[in-house]
Length: 266
Image 1 (cartoon, helix red, strand yellow):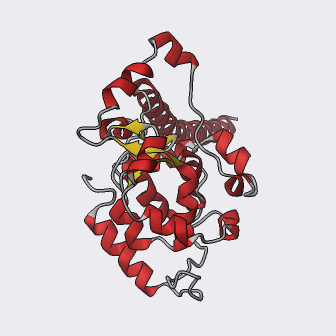
Image 2 (cartoon, helix red, strand yellow):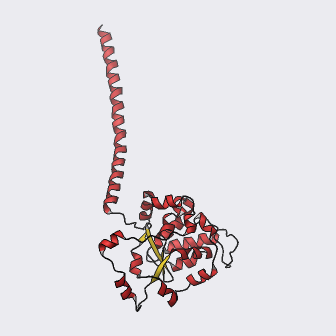
């Protein structure tokens, strides 16, 4: 989809949000999330209205000067669950740790929310965030910021790109860790889930719903071949078992008939 979420999914999200019972409003006056679609530890994050108001506007020149700048092409290269960035109001956020361990992938009632997150990766997500997220979610978002989007005419963009250029060998040995906020790390079993990554079942589900996960062609072909072989084996076992039993029954009939003939002759 060209947008963070498809129009059909957006309509579903709006309808679900309108029908969902809401807890009491938070300090911002906006409805507070009922916690059904967030990490359990995220409920402990206190709403910071100053942060919310700042993130809902484009970054100031002073803020832009403090952050590394990325092009939208840079962001688009990080569209997988295992490496996911989004853009919200010209800010770049690496939400890999949040997306990879989102409870929705293991909870049928939240799977549409998890899928919406996966579809937003590598894209502009401002409208989606404005549409359905609470002040607490905006406060949490701050902890995942890694930079801002380069604007046309940025005087230092080219110089910064040259200064930060590295050789291919250095890039292979240098990896930037995705942000892991303290409140997220407190979530039960977070590190186990994060280290293990998304399961093959989750990756297949995302790919089937239009969210490529960057698996190699060899991996997909091997998986299909294995599934095909297992299916053929299952189908082939039954006829063999059937023929085996038919041989036993047939042999018994032949033996009985032979005994009968022998009795008559005697």
